[in-house]
Image 1 (tube, rainbow, N blue to C red):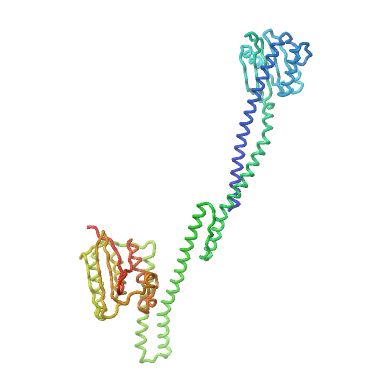
Image 2 (tube, one colour):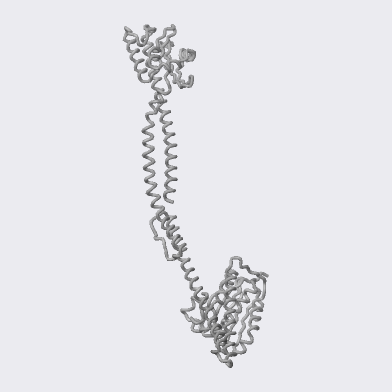
Length: 479
């Protein structure tokens, strides 16, 4: 991944550097060409001045031997300009006298000399003789030419004109000399930027590499792996912290899963072992005929226990499905509490237990899934009956405040030990841990909690002086 990112980044750097270098070089070339053109204009003005001073000798070639100082200097100046720029130089006056360097130009650069168009030259000269300075960039037979023309004036009168024309490549050739330094600077900048980005990206991606390794380890089942915190970019630090938080949660989930599987195995093994043992004992004659009724009763009890456990596991599984839905209606929660108790009348009378109902208001209509709430109330009342001694008392309380109904189921039984209170809603927190072995599967309260969560409400264990009290809330039905 690091190699691919570096390749992409370096490609982008090279493209940007090349583009900016090309733009910069063209700007420098245009600037230098403009500077050279201005220099040519200056040179033409100087030649025009010299021609105005030496006009008496006009008609002599620049490269002939003139007897005047002005003509000699004019010749030297023309030679200098030609040597520097390879320009064709033409000087004319109004009397029609002409001097140029055509012979030298043709001898040195015949291709350029052939591009000189007499008609274009005459048109340019006519403009210059009217007192206009010209600067042209023209194309002739596919060749670019730069033209400069200036008049020479004396006493306010235009006496003649200086015409200079040079190949574009002569001017642009000097600008091309800048190309190599520009390329060198661009290459150095690219290398430096690449090194800096390599260091930065390596520092940024190293924590991501550790994250990748940790994720792979976690995918292989190692939930103990963590990503060390490093002084990286803020986003990477936040990602590392989020990953570690996720790892902690997954580790807890995995621990819960293992404990759940262990508890389910234990809870299923116990009744299955008992049933299998007693049935085999009766089949092989270990259990005598006269004792079989007693052991068949035990097998029946264990079968019901096993069926109840499987039923609760299935119920909890259905409740935790994403598509588990509620069928909410408005009903009287007080009436539902009384009907559940009526179904438990036999157990209550058998154990001599008393029931107190404290309903305020009565009736109290709530908006909830009545079948689910029946399941919650049955679990809470069955727990109260199981863990309350004979002759004990169970209290049902209903209160309505702030658009909520609070239902409390309280008993005066053995209560829950302080160290066990934080875990009462855990799956398979069996009663044997509360020193009341054999009184339940440890799934009832988990089911109650899940049903209340589906309603957007909560169930909690209350602090009481004696016994146990659970309270849950439901939204009041709209009138």
